[in-house]
Amino acid sequence: TRSIDLAVVAGDGIGTEVVEQGLAVLEAAVAGSDVKVSTTEFDLGARRWHATGETLTDTDLEAIKGHDAILLGAIGDPSVPSGVLERGLLLKLRFALDHYVNLRPGKLYPGVTSPLADPGEIDFVVVREGTEGPYVGNGGALRTGTPHEIATEVSVNTAFGVERVVRDAFARAQERPRKHLTLVHKHNVLVHAGHLWRRTVEAVNADFPDVTTDYLHVDAATIFLTTNPSRFDVIVTDNLFGDILTDQAAAITGGIGLAASANINPDRTAPSMFEPVHGSAPDIAGQGKADPTATVLSVSLLLDHLGLSDAAQRVEAAVAADLVERSAGHGRVRTTAEVGRELAARVAG
Ligand code: IPM
Ligand code: MN
Image 1 (cartoon, rainbow, N blue to C red):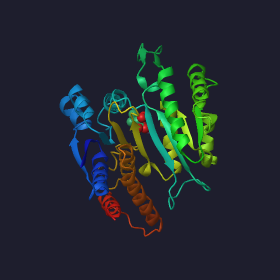
Image 2 (tube, rainbow, N blue to C red):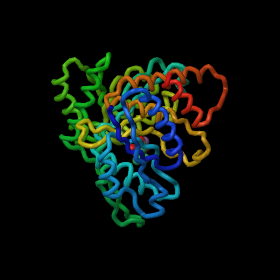
Image 3 (tube, protein in one colour):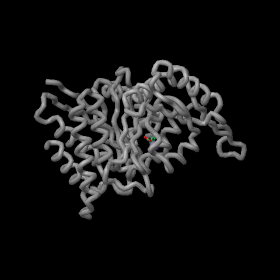
Image 4 (cartoon, helix red, strand yellow):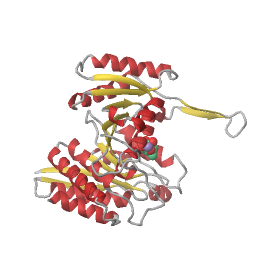
Protein backbone atom coordinates (compact mmCIF):
# COMPACT_ATOMS: atom_id res chain seq x y z
CA THR A 1 0.00 0.00 0.00
CA ARG A 2 1.18 3.42 -0.86
CA SER A 3 -0.22 6.35 1.09
CA ILE A 4 -0.47 9.83 -0.30
CA ASP A 5 -0.66 12.61 2.22
CA LEU A 6 -2.34 15.58 0.70
CA ALA A 7 -2.46 19.13 2.08
CA VAL A 8 -5.69 20.77 0.96
CA VAL A 9 -5.99 24.54 0.78
CA ALA A 10 -9.48 25.16 -0.57
CA GLY A 11 -9.17 28.90 0.07
CA ASP A 12 -11.73 31.47 -0.98
CA GLY A 13 -14.84 31.80 -3.12
CA ILE A 14 -15.37 28.93 -5.53
CA GLY A 15 -12.15 27.33 -4.23
CA THR A 16 -14.08 25.17 -1.77
CA GLU A 17 -16.56 23.99 -4.38
CA VAL A 18 -14.03 23.02 -7.04
CA VAL A 19 -11.64 21.38 -4.60
CA GLU A 20 -14.41 19.16 -3.26
CA GLN A 21 -14.97 17.83 -6.77
CA GLY A 22 -11.26 17.57 -7.48
CA LEU A 23 -10.89 15.36 -4.41
CA ALA A 24 -13.85 13.22 -5.40
CA VAL A 25 -12.26 12.54 -8.79
CA LEU A 26 -8.91 11.86 -7.11
CA GLU A 27 -10.56 9.27 -4.87
CA ALA A 28 -12.19 7.65 -7.89
CA ALA A 29 -8.85 7.54 -9.68
CA VAL A 30 -7.13 5.56 -6.95
CA ALA A 31 -10.11 3.45 -5.88
CA GLY A 32 -9.39 -0.24 -6.09
CA SER A 33 -5.63 0.33 -6.24
CA ASP A 34 -3.13 0.03 -3.42
CA VAL A 35 -2.93 3.82 -3.16
CA LYS A 36 -4.59 5.40 -0.14
CA VAL A 37 -5.14 9.14 -0.08
CA SER A 38 -5.38 11.03 3.19
CA THR A 39 -6.07 14.74 3.33
CA THR A 40 -5.35 17.51 5.82
CA GLU A 41 -7.35 20.67 5.33
CA PHE A 42 -5.72 23.99 6.03
CA ASP A 43 -7.98 26.85 6.96
CA LEU A 44 -6.27 29.61 5.00
CA GLY A 45 -7.58 32.57 3.06
CA ALA A 46 -9.98 35.44 3.68
CA ARG A 47 -11.95 33.87 6.55
CA ARG A 48 -8.80 33.10 8.51
CA TRP A 49 -7.34 36.55 7.86
CA HIS A 50 -10.49 38.29 9.08
CA ALA A 51 -10.58 36.09 12.17
CA THR A 52 -6.92 36.19 13.15
CA GLY A 53 -5.04 38.59 10.88
CA GLU A 54 -2.91 35.65 9.76
CA THR A 55 -2.17 34.73 6.17
CA LEU A 56 0.29 31.83 6.45
CA THR A 57 1.99 31.17 9.77
CA ASP A 58 5.28 29.33 10.18
CA THR A 59 3.34 26.56 11.89
CA ASP A 60 1.02 26.15 8.90
CA LEU A 61 3.94 26.26 6.51
CA GLU A 62 5.88 23.60 8.43
CA ALA A 63 2.80 21.38 8.59
CA ILE A 64 2.21 21.77 4.85
CA LYS A 65 5.83 20.86 4.16
CA GLY A 66 5.23 17.45 5.71
CA HIS A 67 2.81 16.45 2.94
CA ASP A 68 3.39 14.78 -0.41
CA ALA A 69 1.56 17.42 -2.43
CA ILE A 70 -0.82 20.35 -2.09
CA LEU A 71 -4.18 20.81 -3.78
CA LEU A 72 -5.21 24.45 -3.81
CA GLY A 73 -8.54 25.96 -4.86
CA ALA A 74 -8.37 29.72 -5.10
CA ILE A 75 -7.04 32.60 -3.04
CA GLY A 76 -8.37 36.15 -2.90
CA ASP A 77 -11.46 38.01 -1.76
CA PRO A 78 -12.73 41.55 -2.34
CA SER A 79 -13.12 42.02 1.43
CA VAL A 80 -9.35 41.75 1.88
CA PRO A 81 -7.04 44.50 0.61
CA SER A 82 -5.51 43.59 -2.75
CA GLY A 83 -2.17 41.88 -2.37
CA VAL A 84 -2.52 40.73 1.24
CA LEU A 85 -3.57 37.16 0.48
CA GLU A 86 -1.89 37.00 -2.92
CA ARG A 87 1.50 37.90 -1.50
CA GLY A 88 1.05 36.65 2.06
CA LEU A 89 -0.39 33.27 1.19
CA LEU A 90 -0.31 32.16 -2.45
CA LEU A 91 3.03 33.62 -3.47
CA LYS A 92 4.48 32.83 -0.06
CA LEU A 93 3.69 29.15 -0.65
CA ARG A 94 5.21 29.21 -4.13
CA PHE A 95 8.35 30.94 -2.89
CA ALA A 96 8.81 29.08 0.39
CA LEU A 97 8.33 25.70 -1.26
CA ASP A 98 10.61 26.64 -4.16
CA HIS A 99 8.03 26.09 -6.88
CA TYR A 100 10.31 27.34 -9.59
CA VAL A 101 8.47 25.56 -12.39
CA ASN A 102 4.96 26.90 -12.85
CA LEU A 103 3.66 24.50 -15.45
CA ARG A 104 0.60 25.53 -17.43
CA PRO A 105 -0.58 23.40 -20.35
CA GLY A 106 -2.34 25.12 -23.24
CA LYS A 107 -4.32 22.39 -24.92
CA LEU A 108 -7.45 22.64 -27.03
CA TYR A 109 -9.40 19.45 -26.40
CA PRO A 110 -11.65 18.02 -29.12
CA GLY A 111 -15.13 19.45 -28.91
CA VAL A 112 -14.04 22.58 -27.08
CA THR A 113 -14.88 25.87 -28.75
CA SER A 114 -12.05 28.33 -29.10
CA PRO A 115 -12.82 32.01 -29.68
CA LEU A 116 -10.35 31.78 -32.56
CA ALA A 117 -12.07 31.24 -35.93
CA ASP A 118 -9.44 28.76 -37.09
CA PRO A 119 -7.51 27.62 -34.03
CA GLY A 120 -5.88 24.55 -35.57
CA GLU A 121 -4.24 22.12 -33.18
CA ILE A 122 -3.25 23.73 -29.92
CA ASP A 123 -1.03 21.68 -27.67
CA PHE A 124 1.74 23.52 -25.90
CA VAL A 125 2.96 23.92 -22.38
CA VAL A 126 4.15 27.09 -20.69
CA VAL A 127 6.99 26.75 -18.22
CA ARG A 128 6.57 29.92 -16.24
CA GLU A 129 9.36 30.73 -13.79
CA GLY A 130 7.77 30.78 -10.34
CA THR A 131 10.16 32.21 -7.78
CA GLU A 132 11.81 35.27 -9.29
CA GLY A 133 11.14 38.14 -11.67
CA PRO A 134 8.93 41.08 -10.76
CA TYR A 135 7.08 38.86 -8.25
CA VAL A 136 9.78 38.90 -5.59
CA GLY A 137 8.57 42.12 -3.98
CA ASN A 138 11.83 43.91 -4.55
CA GLY A 139 10.63 47.47 -4.70
CA GLY A 140 9.09 50.24 -2.74
CA ALA A 141 7.30 53.53 -2.75
CA LEU A 142 8.62 56.95 -1.93
CA ARG A 143 6.58 60.07 -1.20
CA THR A 144 3.42 58.02 -1.39
CA GLY A 145 0.32 59.97 -2.32
CA THR A 146 2.23 63.07 -3.36
CA PRO A 147 2.66 64.31 -6.91
CA HIS A 148 6.27 63.21 -6.57
CA GLU A 149 5.52 59.63 -5.74
CA ILE A 150 7.96 57.03 -7.01
CA ALA A 151 7.01 53.35 -7.12
CA THR A 152 9.41 50.62 -8.14
CA GLU A 153 9.06 46.87 -8.63
CA VAL A 154 12.46 45.52 -9.55
CA SER A 155 12.57 42.24 -11.43
CA VAL A 156 15.13 39.85 -9.97
CA ASN A 157 16.66 37.27 -12.30
CA THR A 158 19.54 35.15 -11.06
CA ALA A 159 21.79 32.89 -13.13
CA PHE A 160 20.87 30.09 -10.74
CA GLY A 161 17.15 30.71 -10.99
CA VAL A 162 17.07 31.16 -14.75
CA GLU A 163 19.25 28.17 -15.47
CA ARG A 164 17.25 25.71 -13.39
CA VAL A 165 13.93 26.63 -14.98
CA VAL A 166 15.40 26.72 -18.50
CA ARG A 167 16.92 23.29 -17.92
CA ASP A 168 13.54 21.95 -16.82
CA ALA A 169 11.88 23.42 -19.93
CA PHE A 170 14.48 21.81 -22.20
CA ALA A 171 13.97 18.47 -20.49
CA ARG A 172 10.22 18.74 -21.11
CA ALA A 173 10.74 19.76 -24.75
CA GLN A 174 13.04 16.78 -25.22
CA GLU A 175 10.24 14.43 -24.17
CA ARG A 176 7.70 15.87 -26.61
CA PRO A 177 7.35 14.85 -30.27
CA ARG A 178 8.18 18.26 -31.70
CA LYS A 179 11.10 18.96 -29.32
CA HIS A 180 10.80 22.70 -29.68
CA LEU A 181 11.40 25.41 -27.12
CA THR A 182 10.44 29.08 -27.45
CA LEU A 183 11.95 31.63 -25.13
CA VAL A 184 9.63 34.57 -24.55
CA HIS A 185 11.07 37.77 -23.12
CA LYS A 186 11.61 41.39 -24.09
CA HIS A 187 15.35 41.67 -24.47
CA ASN A 188 15.16 44.70 -26.71
CA VAL A 189 14.01 46.74 -23.72
CA LEU A 190 14.69 44.64 -20.60
CA VAL A 191 18.26 44.18 -21.72
CA HIS A 192 19.82 42.94 -18.49
CA ALA A 193 17.38 40.20 -17.67
CA GLY A 194 16.65 39.52 -21.33
CA HIS A 195 20.23 38.80 -22.20
CA LEU A 196 20.69 36.59 -19.16
CA TRP A 197 17.71 34.51 -20.32
CA ARG A 198 18.96 34.41 -23.90
CA ARG A 199 22.50 33.39 -22.99
CA THR A 200 21.17 30.76 -20.64
CA VAL A 201 18.95 29.18 -23.30
CA GLU A 202 21.89 29.14 -25.69
CA ALA A 203 24.20 27.54 -23.15
CA VAL A 204 21.76 24.90 -21.89
CA ASN A 205 20.84 23.99 -25.48
CA ALA A 206 24.28 22.34 -25.70
CA ASP A 207 23.03 19.67 -23.27
CA PHE A 208 19.84 19.13 -25.32
CA PRO A 209 21.14 19.16 -28.90
CA ASP A 210 18.00 17.65 -30.43
CA VAL A 211 15.77 20.43 -29.08
CA THR A 212 15.28 23.32 -31.49
CA THR A 213 14.76 26.80 -30.08
CA ASP A 214 13.47 30.16 -31.12
CA TYR A 215 12.83 33.47 -29.48
CA LEU A 216 9.87 35.85 -29.35
CA HIS A 217 9.42 39.18 -27.69
CA VAL A 218 6.42 38.94 -25.41
CA ASP A 219 4.33 41.37 -27.45
CA ALA A 220 4.90 39.31 -30.59
CA ALA A 221 4.11 36.15 -28.64
CA THR A 222 0.63 37.49 -27.88
CA ILE A 223 0.06 37.97 -31.61
CA PHE A 224 1.15 34.42 -32.46
CA LEU A 225 -0.95 32.97 -29.66
CA THR A 226 -3.90 34.51 -31.49
CA THR A 227 -2.91 33.99 -35.13
CA ASN A 228 -0.94 30.73 -35.02
CA PRO A 229 -0.99 28.99 -31.64
CA SER A 230 0.00 25.70 -33.31
CA ARG A 231 3.52 27.03 -33.67
CA PHE A 232 4.14 26.59 -29.93
CA ASP A 233 5.42 23.46 -28.24
CA VAL A 234 7.17 24.46 -25.01
CA ILE A 235 7.37 28.10 -23.96
CA VAL A 236 9.77 29.19 -21.24
CA THR A 237 9.40 32.64 -19.78
CA ASP A 238 9.63 34.73 -16.65
CA ASN A 239 7.09 34.96 -13.87
CA LEU A 240 5.10 37.99 -15.05
CA PHE A 241 5.17 37.29 -18.79
CA GLY A 242 4.12 33.74 -17.94
CA ASP A 243 1.23 34.98 -15.82
CA ILE A 244 -0.11 37.06 -18.68
CA LEU A 245 0.51 34.56 -21.48
CA THR A 246 -1.15 31.73 -19.58
CA ASP A 247 -4.38 33.69 -19.21
CA GLN A 248 -4.29 34.23 -22.96
CA ALA A 249 -3.50 30.54 -23.41
CA ALA A 250 -6.55 29.68 -21.30
CA ALA A 251 -8.73 32.02 -23.32
CA ILE A 252 -7.86 30.43 -26.65
CA THR A 253 -8.28 26.87 -25.36
CA GLY A 254 -11.82 27.13 -24.00
CA GLY A 255 -11.52 29.51 -21.12
CA ILE A 256 -10.27 29.79 -17.61
CA GLY A 257 -12.69 27.10 -16.42
CA LEU A 258 -10.49 24.49 -18.08
CA ALA A 259 -6.99 25.80 -17.35
CA ALA A 260 -4.88 23.67 -15.01
CA SER A 261 -1.56 24.40 -13.40
CA ALA A 262 1.20 22.80 -11.39
CA ASN A 263 3.62 24.66 -9.17
CA ILE A 264 6.47 22.22 -9.19
CA ASN A 265 9.55 21.84 -7.05
CA PRO A 266 11.49 19.54 -9.40
CA ASP A 267 14.16 18.84 -6.78
CA ARG A 268 11.45 17.51 -4.45
CA THR A 269 12.83 19.34 -1.45
CA ALA A 270 9.23 20.40 -0.67
CA PRO A 271 5.77 19.39 -1.85
CA SER A 272 4.55 20.67 -5.21
CA MET A 273 1.21 22.45 -5.46
CA PHE A 274 -1.59 21.96 -7.95
CA GLU A 275 -4.24 24.59 -8.63
CA PRO A 276 -6.61 25.80 -11.31
CA VAL A 277 -5.37 28.95 -13.06
CA HIS A 278 -8.64 30.73 -12.29
CA GLY A 279 -9.30 32.81 -9.18
CA SER A 280 -11.92 32.72 -6.45
CA ALA A 281 -14.71 34.21 -8.65
CA PRO A 282 -16.64 35.79 -5.74
CA ASP A 283 -19.45 36.76 -8.12
CA ILE A 284 -20.50 33.14 -8.60
CA ALA A 285 -19.25 31.65 -5.32
CA GLY A 286 -21.60 29.40 -3.37
CA GLN A 287 -23.98 28.93 -6.28
CA GLY A 288 -22.71 25.67 -7.71
CA LYS A 289 -21.94 27.37 -11.00
CA ALA A 290 -18.16 26.99 -11.07
CA ASP A 291 -16.67 24.52 -13.52
CA PRO A 292 -14.47 22.11 -11.53
CA THR A 293 -12.73 20.90 -14.71
CA ALA A 294 -9.61 23.05 -14.25
CA THR A 295 -9.17 21.61 -10.76
CA VAL A 296 -9.76 18.08 -12.01
CA LEU A 297 -7.11 18.55 -14.71
CA SER A 298 -4.81 19.90 -11.98
CA VAL A 299 -5.46 16.68 -10.07
CA SER A 300 -4.29 14.83 -13.17
CA LEU A 301 -1.04 16.82 -13.06
CA LEU A 302 -0.77 15.99 -9.35
CA LEU A 303 -1.14 12.26 -9.96
CA ASP A 304 1.43 12.43 -12.73
CA HIS A 305 3.88 14.25 -10.48
CA LEU A 306 3.49 11.55 -7.84
CA GLY A 307 4.35 8.89 -10.39
CA LEU A 308 0.77 7.66 -10.80
CA SER A 309 0.77 8.29 -14.53
CA ASP A 310 -1.85 5.66 -15.22
CA ALA A 311 -4.36 7.30 -12.88
CA ALA A 312 -3.36 10.70 -14.25
CA GLN A 313 -4.16 9.59 -17.78
CA ARG A 314 -7.50 8.17 -16.76
CA VAL A 315 -8.47 11.49 -15.18
CA GLU A 316 -7.44 13.41 -18.27
CA ALA A 317 -9.27 10.95 -20.51
CA ALA A 318 -12.42 11.38 -18.41
CA VAL A 319 -12.23 15.14 -18.86
CA ALA A 320 -11.60 14.77 -22.59
CA ALA A 321 -14.64 12.50 -22.96
CA ASP A 322 -16.79 14.85 -20.89
CA LEU A 323 -15.73 17.80 -23.06
CA VAL A 324 -16.72 15.94 -26.22
CA GLU A 325 -20.09 15.14 -24.72
CA ARG A 326 -20.61 18.75 -23.68
CA SER A 327 -20.05 19.82 -27.26
CA ALA A 328 -22.74 17.43 -28.42
CA GLY A 329 -24.77 20.32 -27.11
CA HIS A 330 -27.48 18.79 -25.03
CA GLY A 331 -27.79 22.27 -23.64
CA ARG A 332 -27.83 20.92 -20.15
CA VAL A 333 -26.25 23.27 -17.65
CA ARG A 334 -24.73 21.20 -14.87
CA THR A 335 -23.83 22.24 -11.36
CA THR A 336 -20.28 22.04 -10.03
CA ALA A 337 -21.19 18.88 -8.13
CA GLU A 338 -22.85 17.29 -11.15
CA VAL A 339 -19.79 17.80 -13.32
CA GLY A 340 -17.60 16.40 -10.54
CA ARG A 341 -19.85 13.40 -10.01
CA GLU A 342 -19.95 12.57 -13.72
CA LEU A 343 -16.18 12.91 -14.05
CA ALA A 344 -15.65 10.69 -11.02
CA ALA A 345 -18.04 8.11 -12.51
CA ARG A 346 -16.11 8.12 -15.79
CA VAL A 347 -12.80 7.70 -14.00
CA ALA A 348 -14.17 4.81 -12.00
CA GLY A 349 -15.14 3.34 -15.37
C1 IPM B 1 -2.09 33.13 -11.10
C2 IPM B 1 -2.63 34.33 -10.37
C3 IPM B 1 -1.60 34.76 -9.32
C4 IPM B 1 -0.33 35.14 -10.05
C5 IPM B 1 -2.06 35.91 -8.40
C6 IPM B 1 -3.39 35.62 -7.75
C7 IPM B 1 -1.02 36.23 -7.36
O1 IPM B 1 -2.93 35.36 -11.25
O2 IPM B 1 -1.90 32.09 -10.47
O3 IPM B 1 -1.87 33.23 -12.31
O4 IPM B 1 -0.19 36.29 -10.48
O5 IPM B 1 0.52 34.28 -10.19
MN1 MN C 1 -2.64 34.83 -13.33
